[in-house]
Length: 397
Image (cartoon, rainbow, N blue to C red; front, side, top):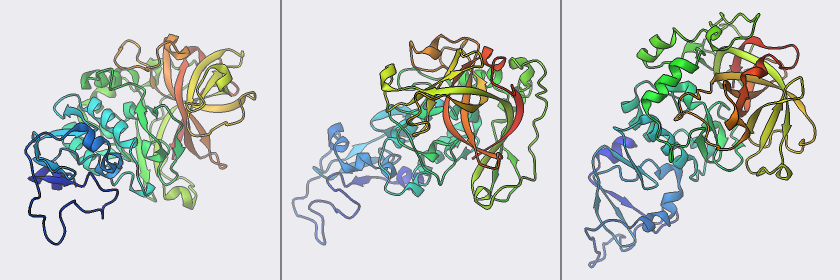
């Protein structure tokens, strides 16, 4: 659809209608003789108050053609080629592509989608536009050029709900508005800072498998891949004593269930630990719409915090639970433009920390799903629960 709107001379928006069959005022089998078309800018409020501006399918299409008209008082407005406007946030694709992607993602996931199965189809126009600028490809809605970075998403102010037809490691697997752990609307993220973070704070070599196919490496920008091979040895990232992090290659033959064989899986090696989690409540000063969990080590000391996805651990505020935590990347606190955005929170004071994912495994212990994202201290690695840290192969659905 991006090609259709980009190449179109004009787009007529049925802003007064509530569905695709509403039609245009004054236009039927015969056009009204006094049907006006004026050459003036479209008022922001005109589209903001329309059904058009709430739908996910129309999110990539606004302002993509040479001009567009809104039907309530038909107008024609020109727009610059190559310029993309979503929710009236204007960002040239020539600027930071990471910042543009995150801003568009937040706008898109905040819109209404009638059919859950269309979540990636409706996003396809944005993917095509960004692919031409970012290079690489997209994997379930995530740019592969910096997969480590774009996996760090969370709910934007409200609880997410699981969309089970899509993988939990992608925002497509969750209903609700999604944002990054970095706030692109207040903190400009340069592509250079993301590349620096990838080269100094990450170690995971990603593989992807779909259906019955064997795992294949996730395609990344070749310059990034070549430079990352120097630092993806976990021994330089605070590896605990006695851990051998040399394994990187994926297991080819897995005893996957028929259900899991149909899903999209990420396969990789990283450090796994066990900690106790206590879900917080409104009584603790937290908003129940943004559920969190405090992580506690074997000495009963707080060592991190998790932003929980969905209703995980609902009703268990007073009961601690042993959970599996996998490390995704270093927190990168030496780069202030790649950090969490919650000023003053407990994790804001942590130094030498890691971005982590809380996962829960299937009954066969082979495949895991994401249940939350957060940060732990480096000290948590040495004070985790039995059996202690382990370098494990993760199959993430």
